[in-house]
Image 1: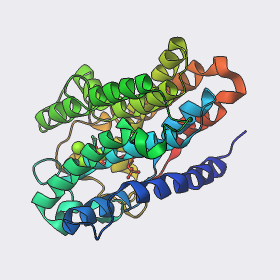
Image 2: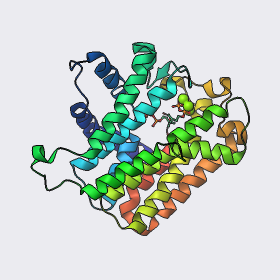
Image 3: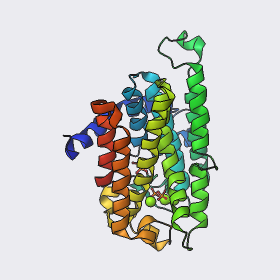
Image 4: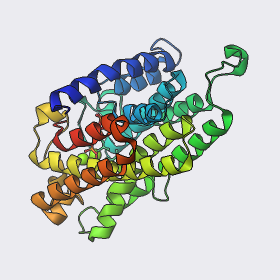
Length: 307
Ligand code: IPE
Ligand code: IPE
Ligand code: MG
Ligand code: MG
Ligand code: MG
């Protein structure tokens, strides 16, 4: 039985490999034009759980693949995630001053630079996903096949797009502010703005491992369930969490009259829903027995996380 402390220290220990690769992949602070590279590195290295990269890595591990390409996939997913955070915090969106315990990008670098830093991160993510130049790597044997790479690029683009993806979710989130959406619309917002990228991270890990379609489908259900649970817990932490631990301003959803699970369903029902989603996610992976233990523990951890 994995204790909470064990899974937390496992998460921390796994972060280092992503941080090292991210340091290599991002242009250095003295590369011209320096200002944008400083802003990109500021937000990437401001902290962060690196949950999405780990999910991609663990999904690939479940199907027996572990290589540098999978770590790079995780880094690309993190770049996309950080782009979404920088833009989410902008004055025109959530207008937040604090992220990962530090002033938000636009507070430090100004709004124009923050917009461009977000754009730059999402652009770099797709350059990384396209893979290294074969002339430079000598066509390295452990590289993921081009067909898997292409599929992952398509899946991730869709997951952050407007049709059920991150951008679609953000649009309906903004349009639902100060009016009370029905439960179905709320589920759409959360599954799209947050769930879609989390689901894509595990799917893409499985695709890089060239898992059979049935397995990709199974981890996909796991990803969708924990993705929705993740945003429900994010809403709950905005009500119940502490700013010091979260590294974000608390109570802002209520002040901005955001469409959240606690606002629509109440705190206890939201907690119950998140619990049921995580239970369902763990159940889907039962056919893998002990091999699924880490992904199941990560799912359980999401219910008790404090940041
Ligand atoms: C925050 O995501 C934004 C949401 C999608 C709710 P995380 O809670 O994973 O943020 P970091 O990466 O750890 O800062
Ligand atoms: C964020 O939802 C979703 C994305 C960044 C796409 P929130 O607006 O609730 O996230 P936080 O609370 O600012 O991290
Ligand atoms: Mg938001
Ligand atoms: Mg926000
Ligand atoms: Mg939130």
